[in-house]
Length: 93
Image (cartoon, rainbow, N blue to C red; front, side, top):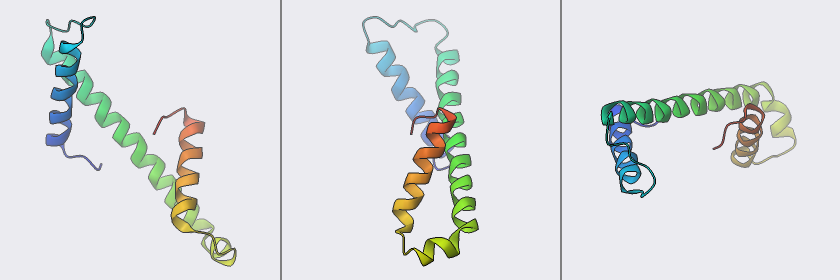
């Protein structure tokens, strides 16, 4: 996970503040529950993205010889694979 628990808590607080400032959203009751739900969603998204990154690295490792033979840009290839895997999972990067 690329974000620390502290950073996730910080972002959760910022998102809650944005929600409270929005004229149509009123999460005044159960603020702790809303904050925890936001933090859990952030952490869950980070975990999914980490899983996708691991899958990308596995695919690159499995096909490393072929990639080198075709002289492909590894960074661009990783990005393309990651986007495609995320799309197949219905996950927005």
